Image (tube, rainbow, N blue to C red):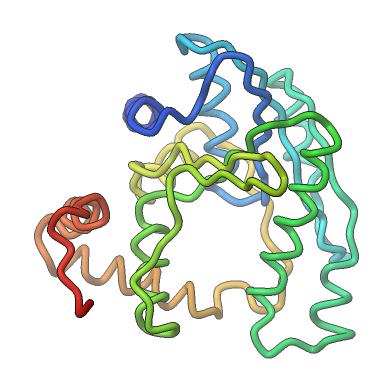
Length: 236
């Protein structure tokens, strides 16, 4: 966790993610990335130069076997407020609309629910657990399936909602998160989604792992490419 905290601190400083007086909610899916982010940000709060409030919010999509019990106990043991937003997203996406690409609509609806909740509860920043591997995978998906060179940004301001999205794990490797979650025995809530582990993102994630094993310093160089706007050379 020390290595993760170092990367988190650097990301926060490089992109001015956290400021005095911020009310930050971690968007908690139940997975390893977001549970590690909750733990790390709670530690970071103790020595951060910026004084901020921290809490946790989850979107329950409405699957009958979704169980946040262990996660709730863990979060409350940390002394953090925890809110679960009950929704009918699963019913809408799978039963009513029968989406061929359910992930896109599900993600949009989940983020919408969190943003609306944040606005009503004076939360000005939402932290997501996306890490470096996620940013590379998103870049690959954008190129392969959309014909665009694009990935998410470390900090995104939503002017319509007056809410800022931050990704403090932007420099963190997925392997570091896996190791920390295992070492600290952090509770992970398995997703009951019927398409879990069978998506385009999972394919892109596998490519990142494959390239990392075959190309020396792959992740480091991809990070450099993402930050190197001065040497961007495309057909325009």
